[in-house]
Image (cartoon, rainbow, N blue to C red; front, top):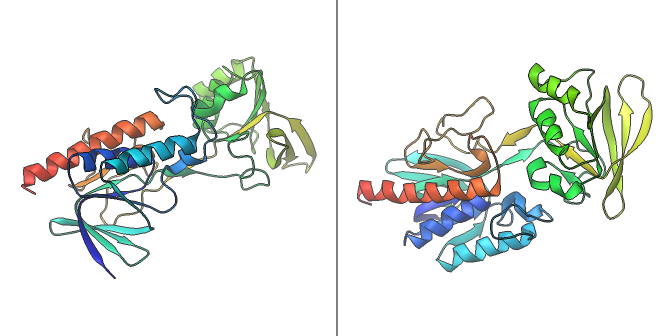
Length: 309
């Protein structure tokens, strides 16, 4: 087991983490980013991005690579490891990894993102980025004048389904119960929307297609009846879980488990910051994460300066 000392340790390599790494390294602080998989986070699995300023069209993998290389050009160190725990010991924040290595730092920036809950049905993973999505704002515009299926019954599912009516010829919301869980006012708006239809008491059994999604197989949970529905896309909104349980310290969180920060991105534990999807906020987009990462890194630098480190 080795212990290595840094000024800033960033946990998670999504857009927020990579931006924090760029600013931390650019400030001439010894900065390391620890990512379990490949840098880029969820955008690395996104087929095409068209809502990031300066790039009308770019693949998620290309944008992730550009962000990574840009941050590295300023001296950011990037390693692959799984962070098991973050804790405070005196003036240091310790980051313990699965490899046995421990990274000791004056500041830590948590950029661990989160994960959408999956349907776990055949075709879901195979068609990710080719008709299966978990973000209406990100991908809705790719399915203009197509029939779009939305899965879920809560506020997020209904609101995202209404948003998708801006693009699709029809949006069909599929829900396993016979009534929605969304707030009544949201339901009323959805029921009045002429582009929306509802399939009750039903679940998706399989997502089908060739190069892209072209249909779903649906099962009625009460009758057992099986049917096929021709759709060009499936948007899944059955929940999102932030990867926020990485600290020994009792960080303040909201009711959804997202880390609460102040305007400096600082958590309830001094010297520990959070950015991107793991943080409690209104919108979760690449642009948000980049702004968060900038603020977190600048705030971490100022924190160290004030401490005389």
